[in-house]
Amino acid sequence: MKCMLGLLKVKVIRGINLAYRDTKGSDPYVVLRFGHQKLKTSVKKSNVNPEWNEYLTLSISEPIHPIKIEVFDKDTFTRDDEMGDAEFGIRPLVDCAQMNLEGMADGSVIRSVLPYRHNCLLKESPIVWNDGTLTQDVALKLRNVESGEIELQLQWVQIPSSAHSL
Image (cartoon, rainbow, N blue to C red; front, top):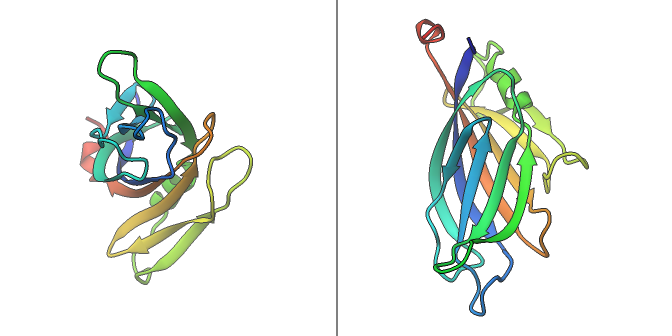
């Protein structure tokens, strides 16, 4: 039986300079995948700089795989067009969530994840303790596409100990 570690609330904030897939732009939406879980945002019509500000919640258990993100252009009569993909690891965030952070000052950076060639981070991604919550701002460069970035905010939701064995 898998051990449930917690929940990850992923706020899909915005897309920046996404690729054009139609003459007037694109109708983008984001798909998040983690293990067997697959969640989608709403579609933003004719917008290559969409603002979603939507929360998608994943349940996190071992083994911890990277989260995969895919961006698509919604089409009515044909298959949706691919607009790039990215992936990022959440192990650093999970490791921080398992630390005892009681008494830690608000705004404390617990750890920073740096961009390197095996993640799609555009810049340093700090894991911050604020108001009893761990958050991580993530800016990703989309792969397999001519242009595009996605901005997310991750928020760890701790599950009370008694719920772990459900």
